Image (cartoon, rainbow, N blue to C red; front, side, top):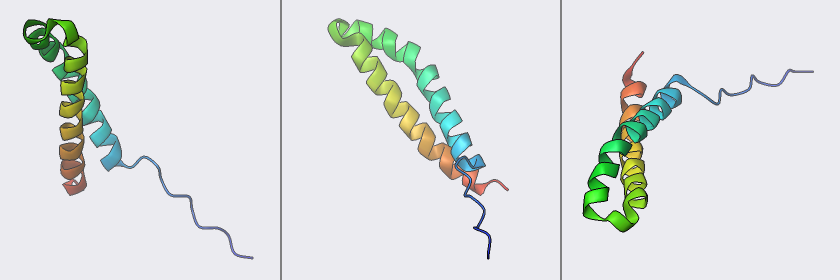
Length: 72
């Protein structure tokens, strides 16, 4: 009877680094985006700020994946 192969790791250093970059990008972009959105669109300031922060987080995630995959 042969043993099953080892389970695949769910969190590699690449994914973990990219998630850290995305989370940091989101939380660093939120306050300035909220201040700007309050001046430009006061009725929907929080919605616009969260959408902009999500965009920043998405870009940070992609950049984080690319950078982390090049590290040893």
